[in-house]
Length: 479
Image 1 (cartoon, rainbow, N blue to C red):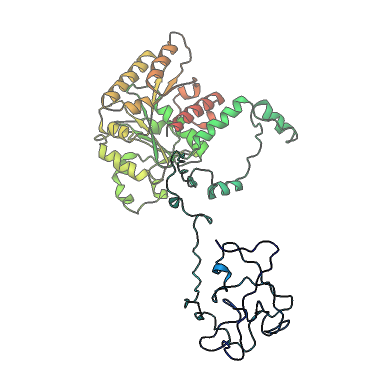
Image 2: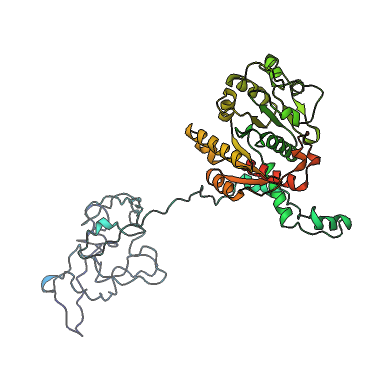
């Protein structure tokens, strides 16, 4: 254990080493003992620096050495201190030079980075700062450096956030943006009945909304005017003569023509002599379907225009539809074939959007079968008589047996009412065909139609026009 003097006992200064005269130790050059800096040995006792501001002379008053630090090596038996030891010197006074203890004539400091060489100090490599490594964990070492911890809870990683779904319908589209330009429809104003008369009588000063019946009427008109998306064919069938097929074809074509504005053709596809041309309005010519069949080469390819076709069809004026009549001669030649029906249909489909076909009474005829094959909407007509209804029901059996189930299920049944309902079982007819077809429509008796004269739209009663408008709306719904 190093010797520590007791309290109050003065510390004996170390003997001074002469720096001049005989036996002096050199202070510079080889073998010199440093007088400043690390390993400095006091020149006389604990002398102040040799030179510099505030320096004391080398010989003269000695400074009281600082007490030794605990744990530092001490000379045995109070001997002199080791020459290479670093004394615990007092801090330099205020105003001292930046390097106290270094004489002015001392050798300059080595350049920065050069190894420091001196007595008692081994050569040192210059300090090279290492580049600072970025830590990826916010200044903390990675978790692997700590190793696993016994008993620690393992927290599973959070699942990744789901990517936004840009096609879920929440993003507006250009079509939705363009819909803002659509004009807001005007408030409906009554145009029929007492409400419409009041509006016309006051010159529009009093306007009332339409009633329930007028609202239904407008809905039917909109249904008839809807876009079918292409050519459509409606076929009217019943093998029983006098079942009202020709009247239904004319009134359907007339209603569609009035509400849609034309492009409607009524075609008599009777295998023999038909009556459609007789019940329609007459035109400047009497040509029929056989004349068109003979001149089909005029319409092959890009040839033929709607003006050329008007030489074979009969315009109906106010009805705004055309009629393609069948051969009206009782001594006509051979019946139309399925191929002939297809060729004629290819021509007329270039000029019309809706074709209403009247059929004959022979379900085995080729042109009858060809018309069924091209049908988009089937219409079954009958009078409110048991024989007419039974014939229609057997025809539906025939169609279902030949794979026409869907056509039968989507059919529209039209029942023409007689002038008197006595001895007629209307509920039984309605129940039977309602179970087999899509809907059953009842049309009132019209004396003007029963007369057999050519049918004009203006000659119909309002009840008949409204009833056939409902039938046309039901037919349009299936197209």
